[in-house]
Image 1 (cartoon, protein in one colour):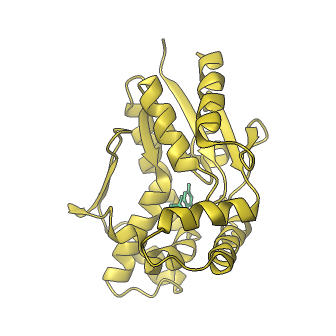
Image 2 (cartoon, protein in one colour):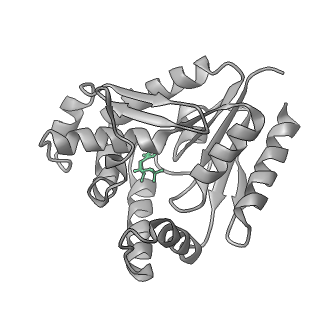
Image 3 (cartoon, rainbow, N blue to C red):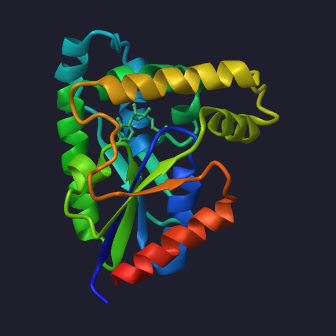
Length: 223
Ligand code: C5P
């Protein structure tokens, strides 16, 4: 079959990453985590002493770091100037700073170009997850999914992921998620939004396996 392009968007904690990786693995597609790229560029800014709230400084440095994403869904990788960034991009420091960096248009232009070139090079197709894939990065995707879940369910899942890593309490996790989503939805350049032709899947009452099954079925219908 021809290469199939799938975009999966939605707020934090809706199961985008777990779903996207599993769907790609099941269908023999590549996988791209665009959030990891925004986190990677944010990590570089912080490491290089750039004030992430200074949009002009962030814009001026937007082209400097080399970001490379490995797209095997069973072992995705991310490097910045050749250094493994998988661990550092998940720190609280990066999570708190990423919305400010990702709101800068020069950052978005740069990563959107990179994401399009990675998608175009995927031999059998790709599952790309993010916030603006259906609306901006891949408007001609074969299938667009918009995952949602209640704020309570999203915070509970995120806390589960953090278990054993000194997890913040549920209320604090929920407040941080809601704040980041509000920033991502409210920015001027390609905000978090459901594309008009996206299929919305509310995952609040679904298991991960059910969400994966649902998306696999939708992809197979497009092939
Ligand atoms: O998906 P993840 O939570 O790792 O994304 C981290 C951040 O990267 C988001 O909160 C958002 O600010 C930014 N992002 C974005 N556009 C994308 C993917 C992520 O602005 N396509």
